[in-house]
Image (cartoon, rainbow, N blue to C red; front, side, top):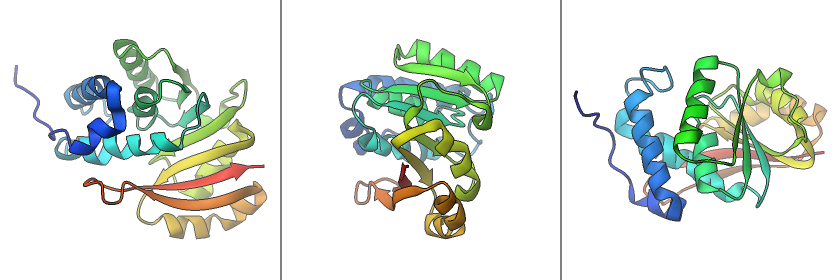
Length: 211
């Protein structure tokens, strides 16, 4: 059986995960070994698995509130949901994913990694009814903000936050979503760039407070 070769662990990883780095390493190994087979990552992602996906997701951990109930919408491979659950064992994570195969992967990984702070819900975001409502909601590579916000905001309690990972075109997405932002009565809207200068790909986040 051939050995799976993927990106070497970057120096930034140990600082982001701290004492939980071994779980992050196991997750990354598992994703490298089975991710393409299960349709979780593309065939070109192994050379950048740590920097573009795992570290990229882990940078958001600093924005998670202590003891928060956090929903990850369209969790897929567990990016950022499983990664955040590893980095922030003090918070509870609900991974919302409609595809059965991906839910099976998420549950298997959570069990293998011993993540007692993870619940997986097989449901579309528009049909999800978390109880209680979420303190914070995350999403990564799901859809444009104009479509994503109406899916995520109803899942979050008043005073909670959406923390949505976006690409380099985030400012254009924010402008295109202006009507949705106003209709959903989001406040304190801001775009953050995380990890700049950390010798890894930066993470761009749209963050806003739910009325």
